[in-house]
Image 1 (cartoon, rainbow, N blue to C red):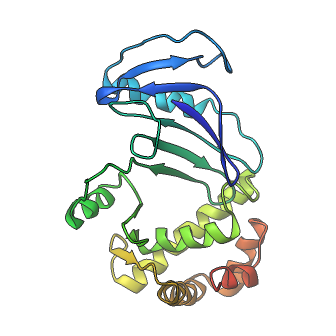
Image 2 (image 1 turned 90 degrees about the vertical axis):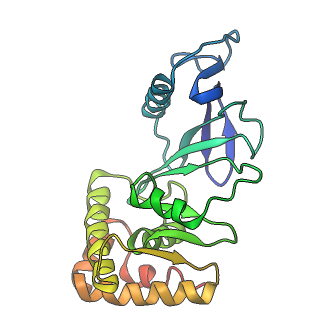
Image 3 (image 1 turned 135 degrees about the vertical axis):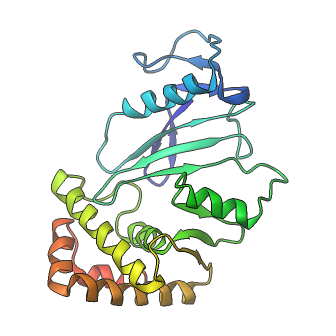
Length: 236
């Protein structure tokens, strides 16, 4: 399992690798050691390997403006895009946990399978071949806004800013329910920029009507941005 630091790029720290079935195959260093150490082999059941990932994520120290996480391999070491799985925590006023799975050669899951992953809430957004995304509209909308305004871990991560972000999330959920008729309804976000802009503009209109422009602006100010920046964030 490799610690990741992301600020537009990835850096390397401790190394641990998970083997077949999610068992811990080998590692260098441990939770207390930061680099160095003799390589050792440890075998764990899947449940223990998952717990190890969670513990390591919880022990990653927060660095302002930097996203951090871990990478691991299943069945083999994480030595390339076909074997590396990444879990990264992005901080800021709209924190989220990003999970990137291996690009397994020849694995082409059918759309119903992708739908079931989102509907089961194992994932909120799934990146699809060709640059499109699948998920609930409110999650897709916030993903686009966050990418423009708070990339990686940029932005105020204070408890006040995150609380304002949670309020915004609730409004976005309601706004999506008003548009789709059902909060759990899935949407495929096109890779075409003009379609994305149309999706965002419509969502912004409904969100502003639902929350009220003054309330929305006040909440955005708590997140260290403003409504003008928010509305123009995805125009380019």
